[in-house]
Amino acid sequence: MTASEIVLVAAPDQAFRRSLEFALQSAGFQTSSHFYATAAFASERAGGAVCAVIDECAIEDWKLVPEQFLRFTKPIILLASLFQTPPSLPGVTFVMKPFLGEPLIEAVCNAIAGGVKGSLSRYPYGYD
Image (cartoon, rainbow, N blue to C red):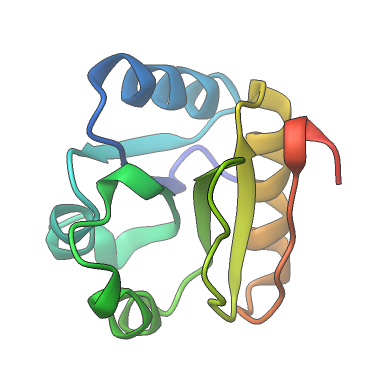
């Protein structure tokens, strides 16, 4: 990881988004934060990002998600609720909410290190 690595963040809740930014920036990542996933993927920093951390609440239309995630071509960490069954999305790492910062950083680092989308992981309560 280098200081220039950018992680896209999408979460509509401002306090949660800032919490994600803080955790990622504390681990040495730069962040590009957005309210919705569509805005994150359309942003000028999306091309230089190493991965995206997307809160499930930042998804505007779940029907567009497979195509949208595939076009991004980089690892995606989807933050999902324990009360909802996450959809089958190849190449997406699921981190179940609520969680502490460490599982998020671990998921981001593992996704970047793997570099290839295609595995599905779940980290309920911060444990694999």
